[in-house]
Image 1 (cartoon, rainbow, N blue to C red):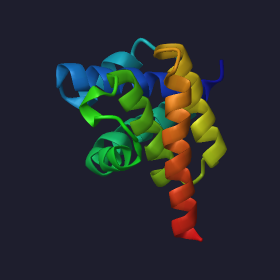
Image 2 (tube, helix red, strand yellow):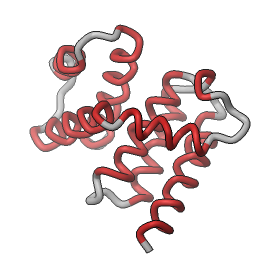
Image 3 (spheres, rainbow, N blue to C red):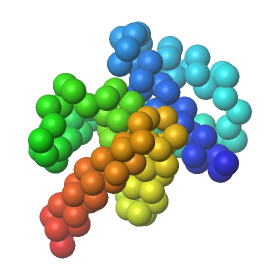
Image 4 (spheres, rainbow, N blue to C red):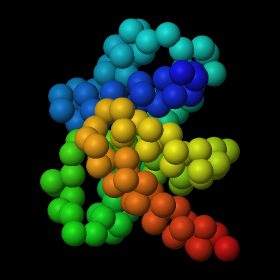
Length: 138
């Protein structure tokens, strides 16, 4: 498994813990980081992704609400919601990452950490948001 994938897994775990426990984000992240072996660039990447996802959560959650069809936001599984948050953060705030990479990584994480149908769900939501972003840019 690549270092970036491990970094994303760390971010998903940290987001999950943050939502469940409500502790200080830095404490959660640092605790999980201490139990993970990442190279220095991947540590920086994961810290940046975690921080940006939390800082922009309200805007990100609004995008999720606008793009889930026939779903109540509060009923989305916590793991799926946090994978979506992380993926959307990459799409919007981390322009150096190709859209396809962000979506593919989110799908793989959903398949690994959530239900059988989560990969398709995450793919559909992120793809819809990515198309809107591209339309807005162009």
